[in-house]
Length: 93
Image (cartoon, rainbow, N blue to C red; front, side, top):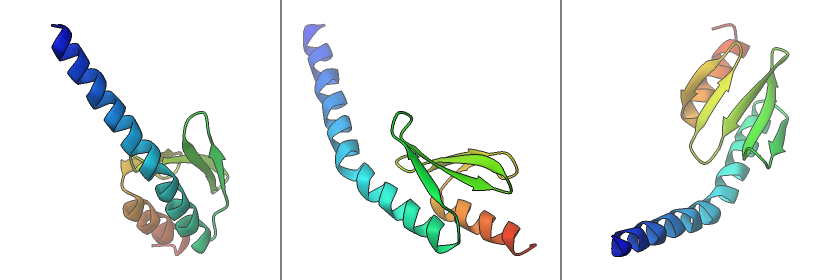
């Protein structure tokens, strides 16, 4: 069983290294896309998410996983899907 535990530990470390390498770029991409359509973002380092206001409600997007949630926009996964939804709501559908 010891070998299997070591293998899982190595996989966990590799996953964390990959996340640490990719996450800053994803955060920058989402910040830029949201600012392009008029949303100011604030980074929550503890939860590793971006917070923005939509129609007075705080909404969150987790850039690494792409999951987003907020009152008035629901929740789903995908940055492009979020941007499309925000643009539709701002343009009155």
